[in-house]
Image 1 (cartoon, each protein chain N blue to C red):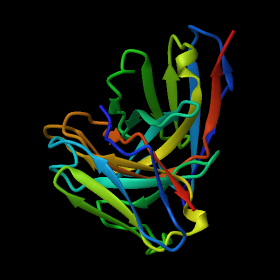
Image 2: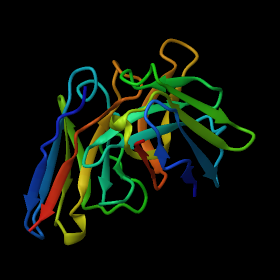
Image 3: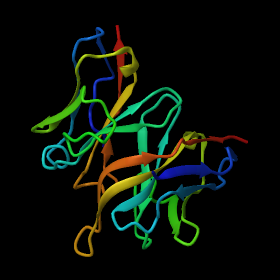
Length: 129
Length: 110
């Protein structure tokens, strides 16, 4: 079954850019039935969507983060990545990558999210000088 | 915007417990894409219900989902100590492409 593994620095300085990569095994990021997403969870808080990407490169982002976030996909290495710029202490969280079940359409709204069926174990990122 | 869940619920071992998740006509009220996740401390969430009522393979039949109007519910029948966890609902939204999460409900088994 599909497995996801996050990787990246556990400590980022304020105002710098957080970068994480998710490696996908026993599955393909080129799947036409899935998106590939990032969700975070601040200490003691609930789940927060960051965004997700379809294999062709189209993205959907949380409106509250859209000015700072970028998600990309590399089909050749079967990975997808997150970049979050100008981080502050409020971005300290556990970051999860995930496989998202949804629907892509060439007409109207391109992305429809249904549910998350596979989660990575998560990686903790602390923003501190 | 987030879906509304009670912060905590409790149940005696063997009883049934229901966790509610309230949204709007833009999400739960109009669409069948409600999902529920179980999360233990320090672990990643796990999908336990999708499309309102469906369970992934391997999830106990003690977990069941329903929806009425703008409120979805997760019922755990015959609660066991291992069910003590955080539970999150999520839904498709016509307003937000990334969808919505609830704030989470902590289930305590007495």
